Picture 1: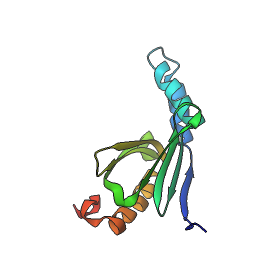
Picture 2 (picture 1 turned 135 degrees about the vertical axis):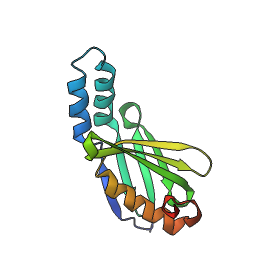
Picture 3 (picture 1 turned 30 degrees about the vertical axis):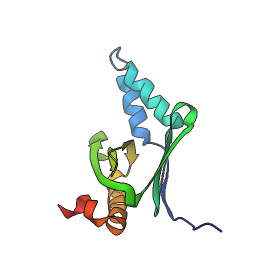
Picture 4 (picture 1 turned 30 degrees about the horizontal axis):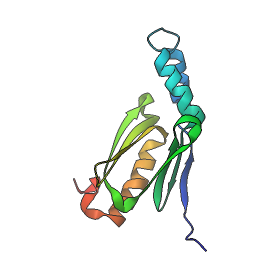
Length: 129
């Protein structure tokens, strides 16, 4: 039997990211942004549990990256969509980064992740500022 994980969030990017970028896509300059939002909406998925962060993405959602909280050195959040959703960058101890774009309820998700970082890796948490 494996250890059960408590899932905090499982799903894709915020729908507002798609809607906003589709509206911007009505201009020639915004077409690449609209295409990026469509690809994210179709194939990007997040799974945040009490043990790890998993990001599934890439072409047809075939790439998966898992990070356990003890590997995290830093997490940074940036609000988007007037604060309804946001982006996060998770930096690991080895310097690798995972970008999480258009995360719904990103402030709550950030707090949840940061609490786990503190529990597993207090010397690297952003909360010690």
